[in-house]
Amino acid sequence: MQKNHYFILATIITLLYWVLDAYTNVSLYDSAFMDELLLKTPHTLPFIKVLTAGLLFTLSLTPLAFKQRVHKQTKAPLNEFEELQKVADILFSSLSTKINVIKSLEILEEALHLESSLLFIYNKDSLTLYNENDFIKAAFRSKEILPFHTNVTRSSVEEIAVACFIEKRALSQDNIKMENKHFTLFSFALQESRSEKPLGNLMLATSHPHFVEQNSAMIQKFNQMLTFALSVAAKKELLQNLHAQHSSTPTNQHFDIVLNIMNYLKLQEHIEHEFNRQKRYHTALTLVLIDITMLKNLTKIFPIEAIVTFKKDFIQLVKKNTREVDIFGKWTNDQFALLLPDVDFRAGQRVAQKLQAILEETKFARVGKISCCYGITSLSPKDTVGSFKARAENALVAASAKEGNAIEIKLQTTELNHNAF
Image 1 (cartoon, helix red, strand yellow):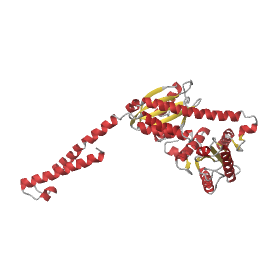
Image 2 (cartoon, helix red, strand yellow):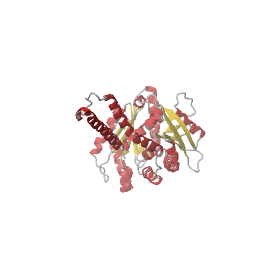
Image 3 (cartoon, one colour):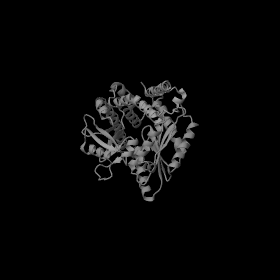
Image 4 (cartoon, one colour):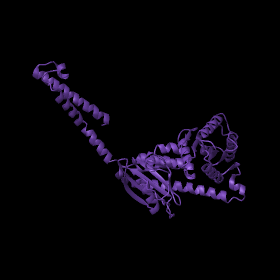
């Protein structure tokens, strides 16, 4: 029986009591039926009758409260194969790794009724949050955590994350209290079988620990799939960097010769240079990341020569419609970046809107019309180079999750006002 059915039944029982009591009084006192219904007779005690009706209504709803309590305590085990199939379809789809990972975490949260999932990527001397949600915003002051630095303002969740990093915990379970609510944190190391060091850590926050324990086998399999996806992405990025570093000529180290555009490594040099300049002279700096919608699907339809020609035309279009001082380069194989010195995020938004309008009127050879997603952020006084770039990536992920041609802006000042990053 559904929840509203219980309320209907309780109402019917209460009305039936009211009518039968009135009919009984009519028989006893030879009074008018409507007077009895409306409590207008001298022998009627309104307070007693209303109290009795209220108690009867409340007691009629008792089975509903009991049913909900039992349902919360005894959640049925999940269909492991079905849930993992959903995750695999998302995790290994043609979208970028970051989008796929974040969407797969959302599937896990829904399936396990989690308060939150937290994914940490381990660096040499730090750990970085990969995803973002309300629980993370409440528990963390920054997405980059320095575990070997003393910080008395760390939250209980941050302390557990630091302990997992330093002690290299494979598995742990901790209880915390946050905002007057009790949660259990399950932590799982993301570690390949042949590796001594974990890639990161997956943490699950829940108020139903028994349900998580009940589905631990499924979580372990999800953990293996997630580790594989992140490992492949990391190795791919490493190979790209090594290829750029060991090119035969200095020019090749800085530019993609085929597309005639600076590569990721050279772009990072510009970002660090402009970052240092901003810190010294307090100038503005904006980063716009651009993702061509469904580019991976286009590569499956058209030959490589057509895709290369399309990318060259797209690059020329962007360069033609931006300033000479703006720095344009590759962010990944399928994403590009615009570094805009001396302007704030509003100018970055206008650049993205200008490109939107131009692309709506442009048809590329063989490919036709395309659309892009834009992630925008501006440098703030409290930024590091890492947090600056990470926030732009988060903005691009948020834009890509929407339909094509979306613009997403993320700013540290705005997020700090909401106890976020």
